[in-house]
Image 1: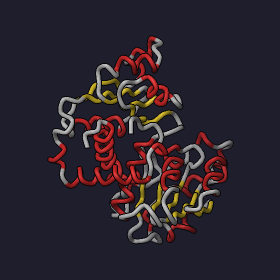
Image 2 (image 1 turned 90 degrees about the horizontal axis):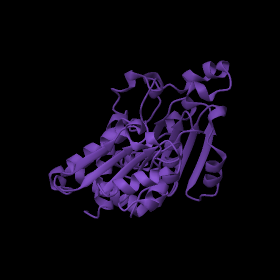
Image 3 (image 1 turned 180 degrees about the vertical axis):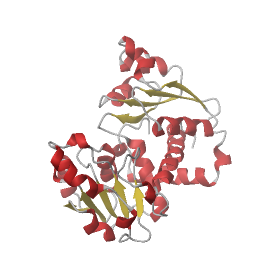
Image 4 (image 1 turned 90 degrees about the vertical axis):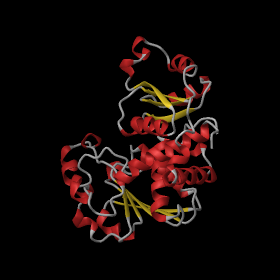
Length: 304
């Protein structure tokens, strides 16, 4: 494993190995406190981020390493017209590993071709966000003790949501997986994802507009935001928007051990009153992101 650009760069066995390491870090943090002493992580964030950037920085610090970098393009030489390739060539002389977020799809892949150190894609436009997918996977496995045989509901904007596409692609490699895609007609999964799933013997899936009809079946509910700007007219948005807001009332028909996930940030698609429900796992999910990124840094630096 030299770089991580796409979640499909990892085999299921490599994902399981990363999750095993992440869980060991959770259970025995002191064992890892000095693993990256003398190592530096560069965070090259060409667009704003809260959880991803800070969790990478916290991950490296908890491993005993140091962090340098920038949090927006305007504070880098990109504002002067410097190319991604040139930035990465320079920074790879200053750091041992790079986490990079960029608004342009494919930018981390280009960076990986020019870098002398491992590149982690921390999000490239609407394309990939593999460490978010690893965050989702470790959370699911810790809650369910497996990544196989699960019924997973994805709710909201399934057309444009990169986290939905990445997680579906990752889980589709595990046996006896059932997906339920819950969205308005305007925001159904893209045709490329539907085609891939239709040819996959591990997966069955259905599409529906009703969250309530399928709630009792779900082991995992992955919520995303329905954005007003995705609709062609205001009337359709107003008609549908409340259907995809998760409330305590809607949770009454769910399994006692269902797990609600959300990549965050949340706007209004999960009512704050759901937060106290023990099935609300999204803040734990965000915390798990730190641990799985610690595991990934260790693996890419060949320190574990």
